[in-house]
Every structure is written in C-alpha cells, then in structure tokens.
Length: 325
Length: 247
Image 1 (cartoon, rainbow over the protein chains, first blue to last red):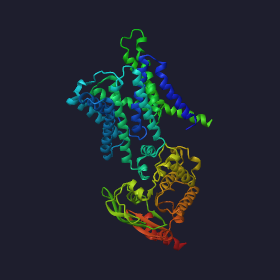
Image 2 (spheres, each protein chain N blue to C red):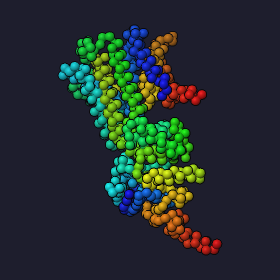
Image 3 (tube, one colour):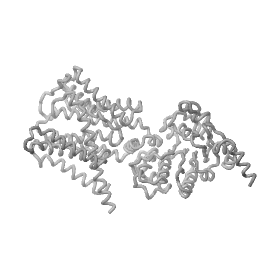
C-alpha cells in the first residue's frame, strides 16, 4: 500500500462521521444507515465468501438467528438488549461453526456449499414460522421504550453511528485478513485447496474458523436491525433477498477486498434511490415500480458484465496503470 | 529416512500401485521412473496423504505416517509438488511462497523474508510482484518448488518438475535441485527427462503397471532388459541387442 493509503482512509472515516451534520434530513440519515448496515452485513459475507472463497447463499441465517436470540431474550426474559447483544453474536458464531463442521466434514464445496447454506436459511424461516417462542408468522414486536439504556434511539443519527462503528470494525477485521497468516491461509484455500493442504494448511479447521467468525459478526447485526425497527418476523429474519443483498454488495464492490462491500452498498443504494421515482417522470405511466426495477437490474447486469472484479477491480486496475506510467 | 512397505492402492478393479516398497536414505536423491500410467503419481499421493492406501505402510524418520491427512504429513517434514502446477493463481509470486513460509512462523515479516530468500534462490527475484497466473510454465514450475521449499521440508517429493521445459531450463532446475540437496533436503523425484535423472539421481526405481520392476544406479537401470521392455514393448530388448551386435 502507498503512503497515501492511511491518509485517504482517515479522510474517508471523517467524511462518514460528518455526513449526518451535512445532510440533516431523516431521509438522508436513514439512507446513510441502510448503506452502512448493508455494507456491514456484506462485509461479514465477504469474510467467508470473498476472502476464503466459501460462497454462501444463505448468509441471512446468521442475521436471523442473531435477531431472534436477542429479541426473545429481551421480550420473553426481560434481558437488557445491550446484554443480549453478545448472545446474538455467539448464536451466529455457533450456527456458523455447525454449518462449517457438518458441510466441510462431508466435503461439500462450491455450489454444493452454497445450496446447503440456502437450505439452512429456509429451514430457519420454516422453524421461525411454526414454533411458539418466535410467535410464528405474526413476528415479535419490541415495546418502544426509547433511551440509550434500552438500545433504542428516537433520533436516527445514533443508529447511523452504530452502523458506522460496526462497519468500521468489520473492515478492520477484513483488513487484518490481508496482513495475517490466517488471512493468507484463507486466500490459499480459496485459490487452490489441494495446494493449500500440501503446504501444511488444515483447510477444514481454517474454513470452520472463518465461517464461525463471519457468522458471529453477522449475528450481531441482527440485534441492531430489531432495535432500530422494533419488529422481526420470519420473512425478514430469514428472507432470501437479504442473503442476495449481502453477496451482491460484496461482489459489485469487489469480493475479497476490504473496501468492496462499502462501495458496492453505496452504489447499489444510490442507484436504487435514483431509479425509485423514475417511472413517475414519464407521462401516462400508472405503475412506476416495474420500470424502476428494470433499470436497477440493467445497471446490475452492466456492472457484473464489465467489471468482473467489481468496482474495486476497476479502481485497482487504474492505480496500477498510473504507477506503471 | 523414508520406508514404504507393501503399499497398494486400487481404483475400481485396477491396481494402480501394487505391493510397492521404496526406501530413501539420508542425503540421497532418488528417482522414480516408469511409463505413463505406471502409478508414480498415485504412489506420491499415497505418501503425501492425498490418497489413503488400501494396504501397506509409510514410515518417515522412524514413525508411521500412513494415511495421515496432507497437512499432517507436511508437518512431519514431507512436502510434495504437483505434476500439473497448482499456483494460487490470483496471488502474487511472493504471496504464493509466503503461504509456504507461514508453515514455520506466524509472523508476517519473517514469512516475507523467508519467502523472498527462497524465491531468490529459485531465480524468481524479479517476478515477486507478478501474479502467479502470469508466469510462464518454467516460472510456474519454479514457483511450485519455491512454495514447497519454503515450508522447510526434510523430504521433497518432486512430481515432474522438468516436464515441458526446454533443455536450458532443465539445466537450471537441475542446478537448483542439486543446491536444495546441498542444503540437507532429501529428494525423491518422478521424472521423464532422462537427462535430469542420469545427472541427478544416485538410485532409480522403475515402476511399471503398479509394480517396482527394477532398482539400481542410473547406468544399470538404463541397460536393464526388463526396463527397456517396459518402455518399448515385449522383445524390444532382444531386438536392440541384435541391432547393436550388427553395428
């Protein structure tokens, strides 16, 4: 990395801290929250899918389990959400460990692993729909009782900062993966598992460790979601759309890069917001939504088609050419 | 140092390796040759833990390593290269070698120093920042060797590290392999390039249809009628002899 790296990074962090003071509307702050929160969840996917090549299609299962664990502890057992929060992370980590042990012991790789994770998330949704403790399809409402002690904030700016802190934490962990033996081993496993084993790497162990870490971080995100919206139900907690969003922000931004998920999340949300009202600008269009989705989809296809390594790939290619020149 | 006893492995009904025994002593370079499909690579895979043998044992430095998983075998000090090179394609040359170097240290700086030293030794100093998939075949073979060597093995299993190289490149690899041996590493190599076998190996095993059919010095092996027949077909040795008697 160049010497400009830390300076640019510091400026970026400052800009993200200053954002709510510049754009004061609730709308802008909520969009900021959504970008950072999706970037965080995307980064937890990226740690497994991008850095270790363990492409998951059901990462939402960690989020969902985390969301339910802290919410049930809170509503059924009266546990303070701050105290319940680590249990969500722990539950996510446990699920990650379990999926890892079972599927890697069975030798499942690539698309088979992806399908297993997808199936596990579906099982989660069905279970949450049918057992009494989750209140089934009705979902769980958390009683509004605003105050920092209850991890409930009336002013959205505080959730913005919670999401920012989580996002920076996950980025720091991802950055560490580029600088440590653990990260080097994950990259080796991603690139060629046989060769990695020949060089003394216990690939089973490293992959399980990685999925446990990723699941734990993702589980912690579940709590934040419920504390902000004060509601969770099975289709939010275990919906495929969230799994897809996680891998999409990472892949659009650049899988296996530290900045990728944040860039991908930023671009996706900005494009999403810009295309939302597109249809209304045309005369004679009564239902604008399909057009918005079509344009949104076209932008996605364009990015995937021309930038196979994501936006970071474009960025890195440019900086390399600049250095050579 | 390495004692392979009665090792067998079948795939379906085909005995790829059948009752094979091989010894490699301290400070030796031993070659394993044989026609295509003789079972050489299967034997290597069994020793290195990639394939569990059906029968037989592998002992290394006095302890049993039969059927251990590859990373455990590597931890004991046996490292292999792959016949078809298996680079970490999107990592740089230095990062590739560092993965091997991390086997003996968890400190990044130490791994980088070790990796650079090994890469330099193998003539990859100028390609350190290059992506592994941008290397030529000769470069990849060197990378394969460098990565393995960086784990500080006691025994190196080299699977055709010279196949597909031109004579000058072969000459260079031969020099490198010799230097590795000078460094105290014992080497067992599979090789088709006889120029290399003759100039490197002290002893040669010949594998054919899963059996060891001969073993001895390179000179003795190349004159052995059963070896010639294994390569050229039944009766070839006699015809060759008649041919040379006429001359």
